[in-house]
Image (cartoon, rainbow, N blue to C red; front, side, top):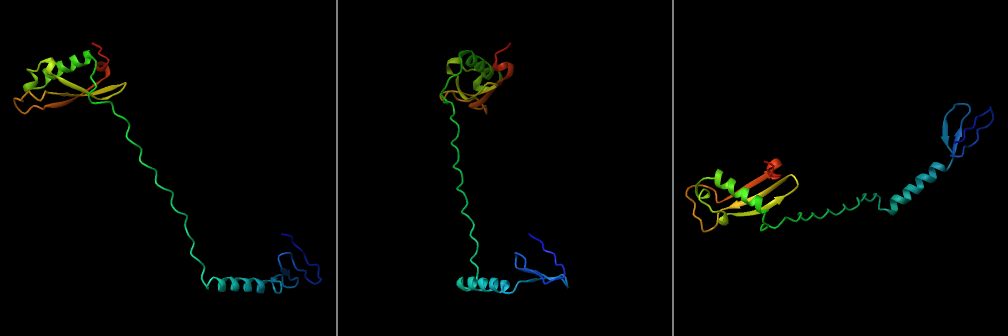
Length: 152
């Protein structure tokens, strides 16, 4: 903004339509400027029916689609023969009832999940074998660490 100083003469209008009054030091609007602005706002409000339209918010972005679950290894996948043998021996030794008399060829085992640091197996009795008490027909066996590496 450009500032003009009065030197005792008549005040000159500034570029913004304000007059500097040398005697009183107050500013007043230039004649006609405020009247034009008021007339323009009155015209706008009459054209819009006297009310301003409400502001509309932009529509919300669509929600992302859910990701499909990662593929799981088939449940019928068989573990290595050495792992199968060790799992059979652990189930036979540590589980009660029908597990104690189970033959290795009757033993069912399937891979549930596998990774670098642990493996999860489902061990089960065959459907033809009856339980002797309240022992479970299916158990989960988790192998990890040195046991998974088969370190003795």
